[in-house]
Image (spheres, rainbow, N blue to C red):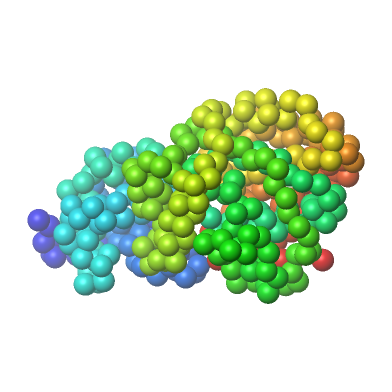
Length: 357
């Protein structure tokens, strides 16, 4: 067991002239978006990281891609897993609110579970955050007002496919109530700006792809998704379980495969008159290789060039901007060729600042 003295020595050994680490930077981001527990946890991991030498070496090897690879989310999920499974009593007690000795609990967990942490670091995050569905649905309302067609959705990086069921959820978008009124999943982000158009969204078909899709009927997959929910946001955990319950009753259509090749194959199939094809992606592009992003962009442009008023095509993205300073809800539509940022959003959909008139 590590002593308080060794923990303090670990803190004092930091170089005050060194640039902030990604873990520390993310701890500040978490504090700014209203997640103080995770902020304190990541700050403690940053201070105590050398207690897990394998994990420390791996994290530091990421270099400039650490942010886009979401290493802080991977670390947080690993510690959440240890706490929920009760294998590290001090950490479990910290999560349960029985003490606030972050450095002590984190140091013990890192020292005892270095290989476990490495395993989680090597896995791509699987959040499948249902809160983002409000932004995606609002963008579909814009398209519904402009074209009036039913939608065929294609989602890349679909995880468990929970956002493919977005038409089965109830929404309150700045006072505008829409979606499935009787749904157990109710999404009401804090809203800024005007409301989206009050247009009916009809989803005729929805299909998604993921390299490692999760099955809502698999308890281990559901547990994995739960670990990525921040421990101080119980409302997100409840909403996740409700969305998983809907997915068990209405299983999303999910394929296993490469996003770029899958999307190209889907849009190459003949469309149907008066049906609007829409590609969706939320917080996934950062995990793709540059060549895959280029291939997806080429597919979108080909599909857009072939679009007509009777068979329109669109792409809705919920992603960080190039500077990773804010999340944009971007709508690109064809045949008109418009490219619009409809809103700025909280990364997990807690608030939406609607920009479109």
